[in-house]
Length: 265
Image (tube, rainbow, N blue to C red; front, side):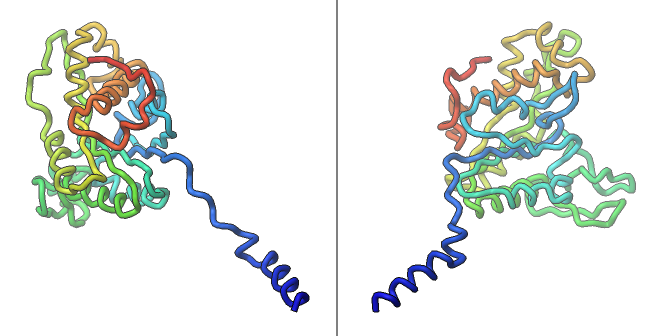
């Protein structure tokens, strides 16, 4: 009997289960970013704000944003799916689109980025490829639900502003682009404790109003949309401050903010 027990223990030690133990759960979550050039890593003298977010968080940031993308093209290129495959429970995904989502897909010159007009289940046909095109909200909500199904938390952010001090004239009092409200509604439509909204647009408006014309114009060396490295850092700080102050409710990022939290507005 003692010999049989010894043999059993020896065989167990050599089994594949013992040789390949289950990988331990990661000690802290990662943050994944999905967005366009205003968030993406680009080339100097321009840079997206996502490249500076890690300065203000205690957890790693993986920037998957890509220049020139919209909610539609990010979906069609499989980039949301790429992020989904990387996620483990308690990871956080920040999604921000809007700059490239306007226009109509119906024409023969459809650029592959324009979403179908509307905020719900409306569908269009691309005048160029014939593909079915959905709304901004459809693409955003579909991605958010898939991420949540993997156990992740989702932060839907509004798009950033353009230069609000063009020609030295303040334009921050104008109505924001429609995709700001669309993003807010996407978070509401998904619902539940695993999704939240950050009005990054409003946070940057407040920041630019405080900084003034000269400082803000220096953030835009080539056009009115894309920021310099210094500008991207400030835009990231505006996002972090919005998270810190629960500008639109508490998000999953708040427990991971470094102290002191920057104050730019």
